[in-house]
Amino acid sequence: MPFTLRPLPFHLGDLEPILSAETVQFHYQKHHGGYVKKLNKLLKESPIAGVLDLVTIIRRSALDPHNRSIFNNAAQIWNHDFYWQSLAPAGTCKPKGRLAEAIEEEFEDMDTFKEKFSKAAMERFGSGWAWLCWGKGHLKILTTSNAETPIQSEGISPLLTIDVWEHAYYLDYRNRRRDYIKAIMNELWNWDFAAKQYALANPK
Ligand code: MN3
Image (spheres, helix red, strand yellow):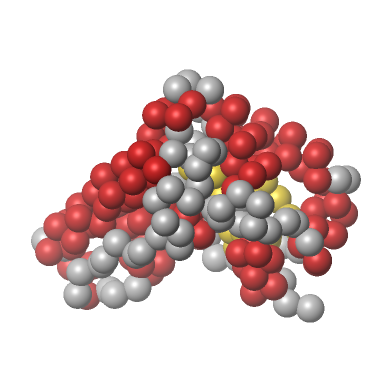
């Protein structure tokens, strides 16, 4: 069974003016959709095709240099699904509850957390991702290169992400990655989604 492009959790124009409908449409249909098409094509010619679960495909292909293309496309499908879920129309939710408390405990306060997150995302050279994760009893900020994803390892649970590939922001922000990162963190992050991920990763 081929993989399909999962529907966006919002309409194309819902993230304006932070992300234009044009950016979301291009990113979702051309880039995310492209990874889905490519993976389905690659799986036709691969013994890994019998595996139906995307995370299993990612973890198996991550360990095998012969499956690099499968890994890249499968991981990018997962990463983009997670990215869209990490975003919500501006003003629809705020950090609250256990996750907000845990951020203050780990990073002092929300502003310090955002500064650290922005710095990490800026320092990710070239294309990649920045993540807020839970693992080994702590919140942590991670970045990954290209298609690499925290879920390659068991025991790390992503809570929120920002795509820092240029295709994610170039139409709206040109080369101003820092402005894009700040705008996402301050306006679009889906804290309700993050709180659900946190509750799953770290149940009371
Ligand atoms: Mn992308």
